[in-house]
Image (cartoon, rainbow, N blue to C red; front, side, top):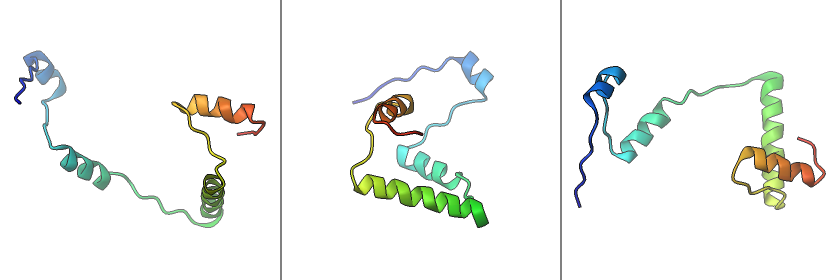
Length: 83
């Protein structure tokens, strides 16, 4: 199966070109460019606590499935929890 992709010359000039990559290579580039943050002290302890709490709730089945964060917060609120 072959397909033709048309890109306007005007758009090429406006956007400084186009790059076409295989999806796997694109994902590797994305992963390589995501910054890594190292927290210390109270910030690290707070994040650790939040992760532990989230994992515990997940294991217990106390999670919400929703199509968006806004909808999840609505469902979560209806369950009588604060966010």
